[in-house]
Length: 328
Image (cartoon, rainbow, N blue to C red; front, side, top):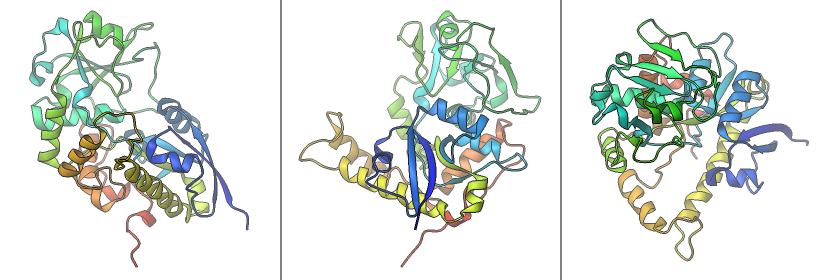
C-alpha cells in the first residue's frame, strides 16, 4: 500500500533529527523534510501555504485561528521552547536600569505578532509592572530593512505600533539610541555590552526564578498542518505526533550519555542533571495535558496585547485527536 506523500518544513533540531534522517518515520507517511530557517518557514507557510506541514510561530498560528476559514491546525509538538528574559535588549543611551524604566519608552520589535515578544510583553506586565499599552512599539527588520508582518493584524486603539523609517534597522537604531529597547528572538548584532546591553544581565537566575514561581517553560513554536490536508486525512495528526515524540525520546537518551558527549557542551551532564532536578525528566515536554498551564498563560498574554480578539481556550489550539494520550 502506498504511503501519503507530505512535505514538512522545519529547522534542523536535535529533537527532530531522527525524522529528518529517516530513522523515525511517521506511520503511513512518506515525509519530505525541508531543513529551513524559521523565518523563511513561517513566511512561506503563513503567506503562501507552501508546505503540507510546517514548524510555525505559536503566536502567528494563534492569530490564524481568528480567520474564517481557519487555514491550519496544530499538533502539540514544540520544536522551540525558550525563556525570554535574556531577549530584552536596551540602549545604553536610554539609562534603563530596571523594567519599570521601560514605561513610556520606544520599544523595537521585528514583528508585533512574534511569539517571543508576546511572552516578553506578558511577563513584563504580569511580573514587573510594565503594562502592555504603556510603551510605543516600532516594527521593522532587525538586521535588514523592510520586514513586514507575516499576516495582517488588527489591534485595539490602546496599543500603539508604528513602522520604523524606511532603510533603517532595529539593531542599529538601538545602538544609536533612536529606540530605547528591543524585544526579539535573536540577539542584535550591536549587542556589545557598551552601547547595547541586556535588561537582565543575570537572566539565567531571573528565568529560573520565573520557572519556580510559574512552572512555565515558554513555548515558541508548534507544528501546523494545512487544514485541508488534515481534513482529508485525519489520521495524520496522531501519526505525526507519535513520530515527533519518538524522535524526541531518542534525543533525551543521547543527552544523558556519559561514555561520550553527543553535543558540544563541556558541562552538558551537569546542565541536564540540573534541568531534571528543576523541571523533571521530561523537561521539554510535548503533549496537551501537561502543558495546559503554559497555553493558558500564553493565550492570556496574546489576548492582552490585542492579537486575539477573544480569549481562546487551550483546547482550541490542537487537533482533537491529540488532546488525549493513548493508553493500554
